[in-house]
Image (cartoon, rainbow, N blue to C red; front, top):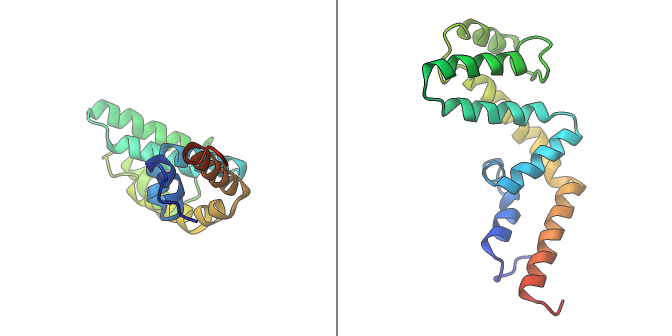
Length: 150
């Protein structure tokens, strides 16, 4: 159901179904997806993806090295607190690059995790009760805002 009187924020929330990129670029969408992943015990994927996005914006060489080490120890190294599921070759390339990290040293792993979320987590999120409740709540909020007699 589409209503022509939606406010843009409501339209944004409803557009989460369109793509993973739309979801990740919307604060409420990201928060809802993060909570969903946490409920499925796979929040390390979104946390890693976000850490990589932040890492790519790093300007100083000293911060690049320290952030790279933090990402490595938190998500990549064996038995890391939030170890992500990546193949041996990708993990090995990161291990070799970590001594002199560049802003793209995590790109391959980030793409793998993004694709995993797109193919697996995102469709489940869109079918989840949490997502349906969120959409219904937003629909009701929009209707009450624009049709106070409902």
